[in-house]
Length: 326
Image 1 (cartoon, helix red, strand yellow):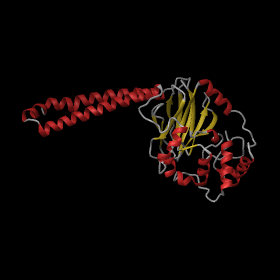
Image 2 (cartoon, rainbow, N blue to C red):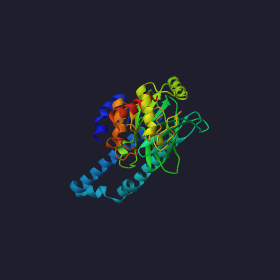
Image 3 (cartoon, rainbow, N blue to C red):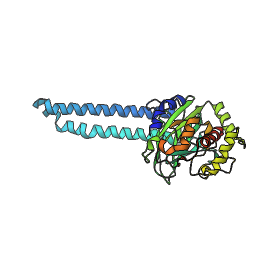
Image 4 (tube, one colour):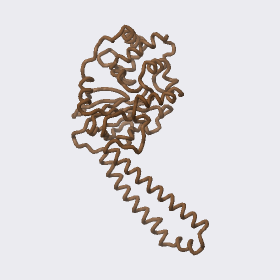
């Protein structure tokens, strides 16, 4: 597990949003959640101080002070009425915030994200909910436009969280939950699974890339164009052949090819992604070779087998093919 940890500085250079910071909102939805968090922190701090004061009175206060503060009226107000009132107000406010994080107005970008051990299946939808584009571990959104994401799980409970852009939402098998995100400015924002889902839970990240509206439309139009059928180099062509020969196509999909596996991440645009291994490594030739050759040492318990038996030239050929998929 040392490799992803030692790669954090490189990943931070590649992704301005990693590691995902909390209490630093960059959108209207995360602003609301952060305000609620600060209010809760302030109330918890106040309660802590009151409890400390009560303990001091109980231990060191005079008999007269203890008698005055221990009366029935004080207990009734501070033990029942005030706490009940504060909790009811917080409940009402929290419900209002939650409704705003899930309500659909009709002009949002639609997406679906499915949690898997330990990666994310990403699908872009049209207004009718039909699939437009498939991807994995990276979301691209336009600045200033809310995004509604349908949250599902394909195995165990996960939790989708981009602290700078919105709230947190659990992904539960057999159920579809919904979450809204919105970015105020362009950039890369780190996200993380926030529900323990197994041994590699802490290494289950992702990236949200926010583009200016015109740039996002160009990005989408480019993704919808037919992909070139011939790799750009002899090495990449050899990698494409190896991709089928060693069994990669059984688990991964590459649009426009015979590789249509669905048990692993979609690799159609893997060469253009900012990270590998679901947000834990910068996307470079070296990390591609390392991931293909020994993913289990980098991310234990993930579902991809390690290909330690492949010679270096074949690993480099596969990495070259992955780089060409953009």
